[in-house]
Length: 551
Image 1 (cartoon, rainbow, N blue to C red):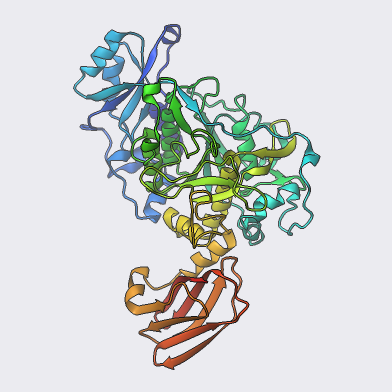
Image 2: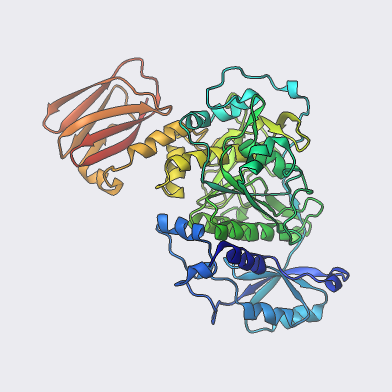
């Protein structure tokens, strides 16, 4: 099936049927869960009927099977609900559920009596986490940085790009080309006219838009928050602002209605994530989060932050398991009454992003972990305090929020994945964590710390043609770890070459000896500072890689 047909199917499946008569009535929205997907007209053996070629290719490259969660909701079940006089507004294939507009109690009773329905719950109002501060519109409020590299003239945005080592990848030619990023946010005011996005539009890399909230494709008149976030990735204004992925492709999706506080916004996020998956997005980035409801009995509690309770968190994990690299802002509740991360930032297998300032110090407002089940959150941190942003009116200035840290990191991840296209989303995440500033001692403020893209790239490249990691423990023994002055290892084969690098990719000087056959000792010079290092050992059979800590 061609892409146009795929898009029509996706739009039909996700954005449902509102009529003038329903809009004129008082109504309530319910989350309706279906029992099964029996007698579906679709089959996992024919995925091109409901997934794009890009979506299938992403699964194939990462060894992910198409399964029943990919199958659309049974259309006969949708028809049965509509026959009650209610109206299906949105559907979720991953959750096998629907958002349904109900105008009276008899319709809800009729829906609950259907044999295909497993249950219903009210979509209640909720309180959203603040998604960022306003920009300082004074361009001179941010000190301009003069030491840029030849790839781009970053201007005042240099700090946020350089802090992640994204400029290093840019210099190597990796600027996000061919990577598709789905931005899920509250609106993208004037992205269609803002000069900072001229190259994005002129090069036809803005592939599409979708407003999940109202069910159309118009997102350019809505809230400015998504536009601000987009500038941190896709912006290209030499001498003023260069985004971290200035050559990537983008889809813009509005899931948040800033004029209301309804639980449906969590469900809208699920719809957007499923759309991103079906279109073949490589990365989703979201600067939204949810905690409390207007109906107190429906609040998310801290105990809910286990990645397995909130429906949006379940969907975020699902998105990661479909092979997408999923980033979500930690939230801006640090030090406040709530303090912790939000939904869906608690999801497993995603990259929750905290905020630091330009000096790499944790931002006081940045929400913290752990999750209720004891996992460290956030995973990584980026510059969300004093981030240099472009507003829809083409003004430049500083802004604060994990909302901004998240897209800055998302764009850098796009460049890293472009440079390492054979790696899975989880391998990319693990490389970032392994080479980040606090990889040796992660905590619930920074996570594994500030990543460095060039260090992660070198680690990923060193793993190409490397020995199966599962065999390392059987064939090579490293000790001690942590190490003071000497690292020893035993290997069942002759060593050809040894290399050690630090987290910034700098080669480390050392001396190596072989006091006993196949027993090696590495001695460090006194100037080697404490931290995380990576040793690469080349043999005739392949390459062994090991991380160690220098005390």
